[in-house]
Image (cartoon, rainbow, N blue to C red; front, top):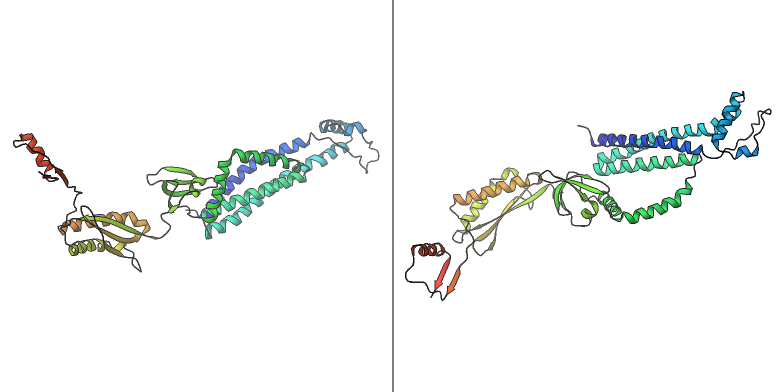
Length: 368
């Protein structure tokens, strides 16, 4: 099984290669776009025999300069063609090499940052840190290379600002999810693998992204929650602590002896000694809770490891039922006494009416 740091490195490699394959054609398109700029060819100082082009040729597009260079080369004069290669082909090759170098540098820096964070802090935070370092380094280097080869990148600042404002207004909810995702990654109220109750959903956290949180429900459904809904409400981290308290309530008949009932419930709790967490304010306790309408309410509390919480609750419930049955203590059903005043019953009842009254008699008391 691969370590978390290795998994992050594979993910960064895959994303980096996809970015590289998208950016290299863009670099070729950028070089081709430069070919549409006007050409100003300076006369070579080392070649006095070369005649400088007329002023009108300096304003022609580069395509005309390429044609003129090729025509001069056919006549044996390679100086214009060499100058074209020097002024445009070499910067284009340098830009492509710069893109390749920046890609490998960004990937190396992402690994250096994400690896220690994954091993020492958290897997989710390590993935986020690695992606952030990779994209910021790679995009910054690409912009710097574009400026170095002569592309005017500052002229797009106003356009980017206006586009950013329009996009921000259109994606208010998405940006809210983004800011909520930053808060979840920074403050870390839960991590991958925790069982949480958030946004009205109970599930195990599978992934925490910048915009969404992915959880798997106990019945194996994959739910994708927006981060704004998760961070904007109450978050219950069920598995944050290594121990949890199991509570089982039970009602017994009023005729049952209190000491006998307590002994039966204590025996039930002691039968789970192998999974009971011992220590200060731990172990188990049997409490007489309240006197209900139809029964005497008892409560059994027991501390168990969090991974075995549901097992402990099921076993404790079964042990309580078995020990109460063994002691002859009944768990009563809810009962209600109804008094009917002034009800006149006939002296002679048919068989069906008499049978119906027999069914009601344990529940009804009559007053004449």
